[in-house]
Length: 367
Image (cartoon, rainbow, N blue to C red; front, side, top):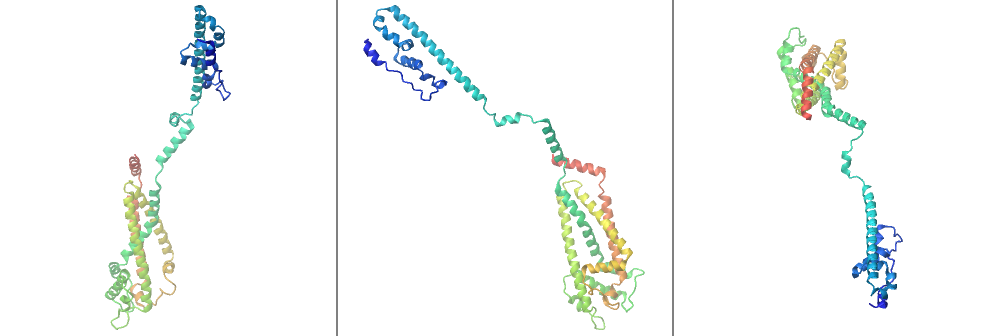
């Protein structure tokens, strides 16, 4: 081989590391020794030849006939190759170590937080919240029970009034011993006939002519215009009361179907309503006993305008419905309401056995 041609084939080494960061393992292959070793491997020459290029050029003419020098060069090249491989392996190991250290600093996966137990205080707080939520009673049943307690007195009073405002009660009044007679000539039969017209008018949808066209045997009107006007006002109050009673009754029916799955809930609402009704009726009875005339006047002032409900003793309404009739009506209404509320209190009384059964039913429902 010509020495001149070999020198032309060996070009100067080019530094390809533009980043000036040759300490990083990623640029290890750009170093001169490694580049020469890689080039020699591609040409089939030993790595030692690239590593000692200068010595090889100086001894090329004498190395062709000297086997000892060639073997020494090959040995030196093999040593250089082992050194380069060791250096490259060390660099790769350092890079892998740094890469492993970086990988270890990664954030934990989101599911790893599920394996961490919170502090004991937090555990106790959450446990207390769960127990409180389990023991807490729903709000809706309590609201319905409060509404039952408020509406029940009105429902019972309206029902009792409807029972009293019937011809049957009128018959009992006129034929009971001690009821005052009419000093202007009405017989019991006359009273029962004319009084039944008045009570029927309160429950039907007829106009004023239902009473205004009635006449006495003498041909004179049975009721004056003032009496007919007052009865029309009374009828309006009665119809509104009956409509309110129907709405309240429907409300209690709906509440029953809502609360029937909660054992004892509807009964507790009835119990609370019965207590309120009992107390209210007793208070009204005391007020009426202390001054019946004041109680009667205040009651009419509540629903009717002044001057529209006062009449002469000779007027038909006073002859049919004297003051004793209203006193007896108030007593019967009060007794009916007290009896119903008392029975409700007795049968709906929240005993310990009922409470335990209700709690057990509630627990089974939540499970």
